[in-house]
Image (cartoon, rainbow, N blue to C red; front, side):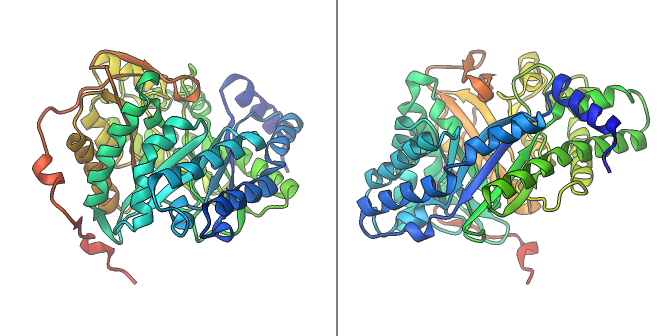
Length: 454
């Protein structure tokens, strides 16, 4: 039984502490759309999405109005397009036509973003995988809502360094294709290790082949709520600190569970998971960095930051898992630079470097996220950064990712404006020493010894 005090408390979280449901993401399988004819394939994709998602936005708005809970985004994820386009697509241009279909159909149903222009190349690239990957720069330059992801490694399979090397070039080409928009195409492109099939957050969301025909996944947020709760126990010991985070994560996640259940019931689509992640925004007071400062580090990047983040991530999971029927996705604390005002400030102060961010990704959700780097950074350096982050995921049996933006025409000290939830970012310094001889080796890095479990 929910007490009136809890209702009042939740209302205050929404009104004063930036609590929201970051996304309702409707996953849709496109496996039954496969056709050897490209025109027929595009027609099937459009009809399937229109049929399944026609009420998604209106139901999301109904829930917002009825319960007073902001739902920031209504999104769609689809089966990785490389899996459904292989029979019909014989060139990158053919895959670009599918991206255009996804974009226009997403516009018809009114969603903010559609994910799944993706390839699963953890152990090697099929011909379709390679064609889709080579289509990414053009696809992201001519669409507005499409997000793309490429899986290049996993704990079970190791890291496909041929795919990593190719992605270094693709990211640079995407930056050049959208140079007139501060290389914003790269903000819709992520490279992943150990990608989950049920992630509701972009740009890495796709509808995995292990999922049902359609599924509702919800991503919650609430860094501001956690920050406010910690202000009330400032200076207390670690036991109280951890309990406060757990209790708060429980309350935040319960809101997500409510929205997920309502969306599932009203759309008559099975409920999948609630993703427990603390996802920041550029808004003041909605920052994971500010939580770390409240825990006790002067700025993110200072000594102690990784330990504080590990503590935060673990307590969020421990508290949130008790509030949801099913938990999945990424779940933890996100540390995107451009989307977190506190992270931006830490970079500007010189406290937070690319190398420290990499260390922090060992203990939090995802990885190097929304980081602007100089536009003249080489393809091989970008590939080396990807390889490092994939190795962290592979060895630590966790999801890691790279969403990095080489901003053409910009250098260290410049600022890039992406707008909306993407925010703005200072261009960060990249280690100037090369790794070409390493990333240009062909083949793949083998799986670690602890992957051999059956």
